[in-house]
Length: 251
Image (cartoon, rainbow, N blue to C red; front, side):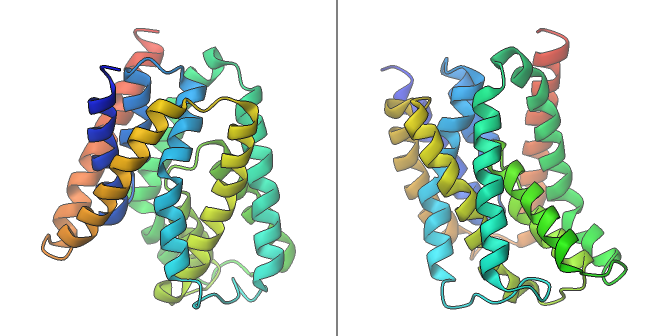
């Protein structure tokens, strides 16, 4: 297929972005759509293509798991998995025409999370009481978002936990990667069983993403974090603007 080299290159860039600052889905999803994959199937295929990289990250933190906002990992994990299942099923039930209109807003939400998520969480730290019920409800909502789309969901989790008083972001990386991977795991299974994954395109992008993730991790040692963040935000904002134009001006 003529698109395979293009998709492999997109996978390289997506994997590198995820390793450096996040936002890899801003590359993988548009690339799949540009290659002719319908938007709902492209979103599902993008989730599968980026899944191994996230799973590898989760494994590196498997010995650093603890509670979230004072709640044990088991209930938090449970509601996240249920949310991921609900979100993935919701995606399958969303007509492509509707998803094309929703997608720019999801990209905008993810872009804002990348820009301001941690800052907002830090500004509101400790102002909301972390009661188990609301925490688990919000974690379920984040799981739904993760299964449905998932862009920057890890940063959204960190921002939410920070707002509830968590201050050690390094300690939260373990729960974050586990819970994001949990939502993605159930979504990947649902998408695969539903037959909506475009496997030739997904596999070539997955391979590119694995190489790009390794290269990005090494490259990140020499690039200043501020430069990486600025480039990522410019790119994600540009992609979001393109999808708004595509959906509402040229749709």
